[in-house]
Image (tube, rainbow, N blue to C red; front, side, top):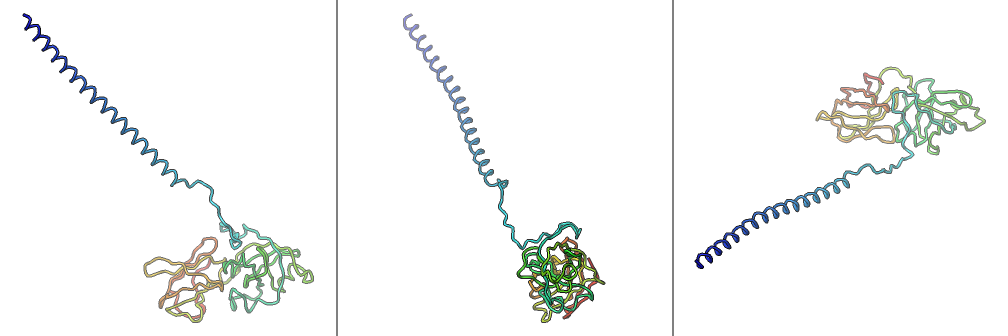
Length: 278
């Protein structure tokens, strides 16, 4: 009887041990699993936080940017209204301008047209070469063709031909307070593309003449079917290397964004009349 009790107790102890081991393994695995999930969650959260921080640094483009404005940035109106912008300055006079000038427009000035030289800032590397402006002085208004640069002038200043100055102020005054605006030039017919002396299939200079509004850019159609911008020079010509033998297709754009296309222009020195006008 005594041995039976001892055997029974021994069996109970073994059973309890097995139960304890089973319960411990079950809850321990669950705890470890939950802990691992929490650790992974924390890691992922930290990882996401780091990505967000990095992304914020890279894409933060809302901070103010400093822009340097050069005096050569002319105040040309964005609209097609050529009368929407008025310039102010000082007007003086000089004696020449008809047979020469930085714009190199000799032979393209109409009878009765008055000419002027424009300050280098508004002239802007011949951007306003050949522009027509309406200038107002103490005694009245006059239309002028920009044919030259006025090196000593400040922005807004105009150096008028002597005969033109007499229309807006007495010559004895010497100078005058003026205002002016860009207007359409009264021209006859279409634009003219002048091919510069010395041009060939290896190099070519092209000048746009007889245009109503100032020229912004000149492009040439490449063999790939894409128009390419031709570099502008200070002498009012657009020049490029290796243009080929021609004929050429040109796209001409004025300062107001209007474009016209002239096709089949031959490599012929001198004036080549186009078919379109602004």
